[in-house]
Structures are given as C-alpha cells and as structure tokens.
Length: 513
Ligand SMILES: [Zn+2]
Image: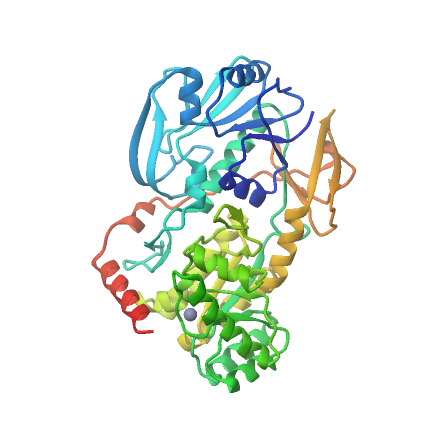
C-alpha cells in the first residue's frame, strides 16, 4: 500500500500547499485505471472526460479516498452549484476544522445541496460523501486561486482589549487554507485506516523554532546597540534587515557577533516596476558589499509584495525574502508568479510589530501578553514563531521579556537564513512510503538526518526519525491536543473608524518617500 497522494493535474497553488505540508505526491493523468493500493488519496482539480470520471468512480468504489472541489463534484454527480460571495468564515466549534479559526476568503464560495452529503463543517460548507467503499471530501473553495492571490487589506488581530492592532497584509489567509487541506487529507487517510505521513516542520523533533527579525529603518546607532545587547544577553541570533542610510551604522552592524545581516532598503519604498526596484536594491546591495556585508536575504519595506518585486528579488539572487503582503503566519514556500516558481524562498512572519501595538495604544504589559499568547498559539499550531521589531520603536524591555520566555520554554532559535536553508533541504526530500502489516517501509531521495517525519493515525501522532522500516506499534503516540479558538473571532472583522485613519497614515507614509 503506497502512502502517496495523486493529484490531477498540476496546479501551482496545490503544489505549494503539498510541499509546505511535506506530503509525498505525484501528478497523475487519470487516463487509465487507478489502483487503491497505489494512491491513498487522489485530489481532483480539473474537469474530467467520461473515461476519467469512470476511473475515479472505480477507484472510489474499491475503497479509495478523494478530495474534490465543488465544480468537480457537480460534474461527476450531476448536481447544481450554488455560489455565494464570502468575506470570511468561522468553522463550527466541534468539527475537525475547529482549530483553523477565522478564514479570510474574499471570493466566491461554491457548494451543492445534495441530501446524500454529510456535513464535516456546516459553517465552512465542507461535505463528505460515501461512494461504494470509498469517501469523497468536497471543498467549496477554488484553492489554486486563493493560494496565488496577492491582494492586500488591513486586518485586525485579536487581543484581550477594546482596540485591536492591525496591519496591511495578504487578503486571503493562506495558512488557514493550508490547514483545511491538511485536515481534509488527514481525515481521508485515516478513514482508510492509513497513517498520514509528512515531513516535520522543524529540525529533528523540535517542538518549535523562534526567529527574530529586525528592520533597522533609519534607527540610531544607540537604539541598535541597545537591541543588540539584549540579543547577546539572551543568546538570540536575530536577522537584521538593514537600511543603507549611513556607512557608520553599517560598520556597527558588520561588527556585531552571531547575528545575520540582510537587506531592507535604500529608499524605503516598493515600486510596481522591475527596473525601479532593481536600481533601488542594487544600489543598496552595493553599499552593503562596500562594507563587506554579504547578505542572502531581503525583506521589503512595508512588507509589500508584487510580481515585479518578486522578479527583482530573483534578479539579485537573494536566497529568501519575507513580505507579509504576500503571506503571513504561515510555513515557508516558493512563490509562483509569471508562470514559474521563484527560486527565492518566501518566509512568512507574524505581521504585528510593537510599532503597530503602540499605535493601537497598548501598554507594555499588554504588548508582552499579546506576544506570549501568540507564542502559545504558534506552539499549538506547529507554525514557527517569527516576530519582528524596529529598534527606533524602542520598548526593549518587552523584547527582553519575550527572549527570556523563549529560553525558559526551551525553544530553539534560528536566524532566517538557517531556517531557509534547512527548509530548502526539506523541500528536496522525496519519500516512497510503503505500508504493510502496520509497518512503514521508507526509501528516500536526498535524505537528511535533521529531517524527521510526523505520523498521524486515528489514535494520535508521533514525530520520529526516518528509518528504513518503522513499526507503528513501537512508536509512542501522543494524543493530539484539542485547540479551542476564542469565541469572539468575528470581532476582528468589524469595521472601525480607526481602520480608515490607519490606512490614511499608511498611504501618507508611502507618498512622503
Ligand atoms: Zn521598514
């Protein structure tokens, strides 16, 4: 029994999610019969010919599992589609999707009314259907379109107080879309009594990872020094995205120890034009190089992103970049634009900085509480903890407390570059997983001893080293912790007059430059 996902056919948005989740998959044609032993689950994203439809129905009758969009379901089972424009959705309290929380869609949701369907989550409108011995899960979203979207909007984040912090970030919450796919696949594997296996998100069996990003935007050397001292004191290696304002400041940064140096900007602006972006960044890069600072990373001013900037990042051979207008609170991925995957890895971060909390009138205690809650949420969701700060926003004692908490929790710290190169190794592994008699036989291309796997069964999950053979009964399975989302999530999407004020401020901030 091969623990592999078959996907018909290639769509970059789906590929991004499957690679983020580290799930073995193969693109299939559906032109010949598919054996339930060759594919644990098949994903169907394109409309089918009558022969292809027959092959899917045979696969299902024999006990296969499939994941469809509504359009495919309606085509195969000849039902009527209902469309509805949706801004955001909140899953049911007690469904398998509850942990996902609020999902921003900002597009149309398509579903069918069919009395033979059972609801997996009536709020999300995700259904399942038994067909013969097999199971289909039907998703009401156009996944590819959502994942590739790069529009932005101001969004508020939840906190235990009246005024909520906000930032202009990616409109679609892509990490939530990814989580919905992962949970659906877990379900479809487990329904067949098959273990669901994926590459673990962190090196070895680490429970999480802490990354601290610093955007130096025109800070003073004194502020930079103070922040550097706090990093040193807590043994934190941060990644500093430098502005190239003064040579003296660059020399200070160059002489710091155990810190990663990367590029932020010369002029603090992103153009929707390749040439202008290229000239701005090229000039900044030369200034760094003149001070013997060799950087492989870039983070755009305002977290802005557009395909012209994406092209520039590649043109200047950056290994990675980080822009929350493209994506936030998510796992790394290679962006897809202009018909190809970028060679530069995207590292999403949590987009709310102390600067934004300050603008929303948070006290120091409230700031610390915000980040400690975030850290706990990230640990529960298995998403890396990546936050950022501007030295000129000071509040160094809050940062010091965050670092102390990270160390107390025993969470490992990486620079962004370290995580990016580890993630690239992870992306290159290819597994073949054969499941028989409760044993998994594993062969792999480009193996790496730092990359572990997560095995999820109906009983729980285990994170383990990759071996040629893994006997399931010998593993220590942990019961998955139930994540309870706060009941007042919709609060974050209520319009407030301050949203307009902050949008105006952000607009003014950009044209001044
Ligand atoms: Zn900046």
